[in-house]
Image (cartoon, rainbow, N blue to C red; front, side):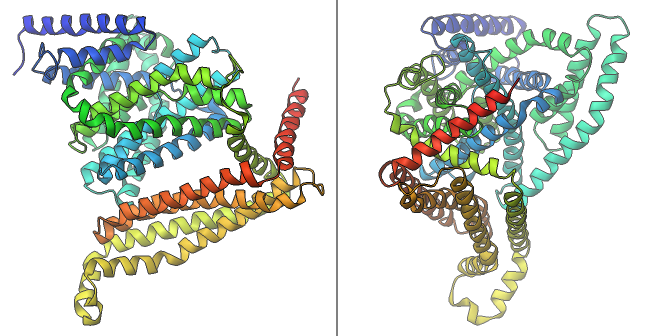
Length: 599
């Protein structure tokens, strides 16, 4: 039932006035205003003091808020900016999001959540808060540094990833399965929508905006942009995709128009208005009575969220050329979670794909990721303050891993390494494609497999589910083994490229065995994560055996943890210090040479 005009005005006054009060109070203790908006929503909502009990209208306004928020993100994500992001931000974004998404999925499943809920949790944890991170950079006075440039580029990559996560997860929920075939179809549909829309829109939309601008009506470009944004959001929803992708894409296309800056400046107040209502409405949906129950559940998620983001960004930053202080700074400022995490959580609840407890969990994790920032900045070396309470050996394992992979990337410039990479990488891609085709074929041929099973009595000594499991394992065994074989070749290539870049002396020759062991652990761990995350969900769907995913998750996690612990043990205990010093010193010398070459 829609409220009267008086009730509607009172609702807006309460929402916006409360948001101002909450934001001001929370800012006094040096936390982002968005946290105050959410807390006010909790206070005035149906689970708080019940000042507002009918939240249907608020929810509708929040949906507008999401569309406006993503429309503005698109406006700030022009094709030119995408070109300027560069390989550094791309490397960091891919590394840290892959690590965080996989760990988030595993922790969700270990907590007893189903596949879809674990995927949503992984998406929530994978995306940093753009608004909070930029505020941290501004408050620290480092907006003009190369670290800030890297962070901003990485945030752009994350925003694009968040859009893809929203689209893919919503389509997975609508299709009712997370099998590889369905996910592949969803990804193909999304990519096709992206390509077709951009190909047409980048040529047509700027011309439309330019033509409307010639009408000499001040409001015309702004209103036209909004109409196009809502229109494409509607089209995306009509085609079974998320409204988010439509709004985002139209923002990107309008960003290429001559009047893009003027349009953005006029839309920003709308973003602030609807965005504030969105965060207040999120607070109103949080059942505060669930906090005691989910506080303990949130604890391991908080640890994983903070450690995973920091380590992933540190590794990516060090790999892309930043020193210890720079990599640590990037790792710290990328820890907070915020707006996109709540958007992903809300989509999951709206689609009835996740339990409503995802709201308090997201709230607790977001709050903890903000609270921990001052402590991290005091404990770890940053470009603002190089002092640290952590021992140097805490950073050495991460720096060694970054150095080894950077040496590998540099070695790819050499003819021999290029030849080896050219031989190995296509074979890995082909094997992945073969596995995807085989799993998709098995998924589609279930009726025929059932007929074969019922025809031959000898097959019925095991259940039909076990029969499909055995058949699936046999069918994909060769390409999976082949992938691990290629991982061995990559190990040898990494070892040789690293070995060539350090000085061979009798003092450290014996330590080469441990260097090889370290590289083997890292490559094998990555291969295990890749195969497990790619294959086991599909096997679970094909066979219908729910236990496969938790057993596989535990086994994968056990293997990965063992390899990581062994790697750190090798670096800290076994590998001779001469190799570590030479690796890091050689890396520092190379950086100095590169800087000296720059004009």
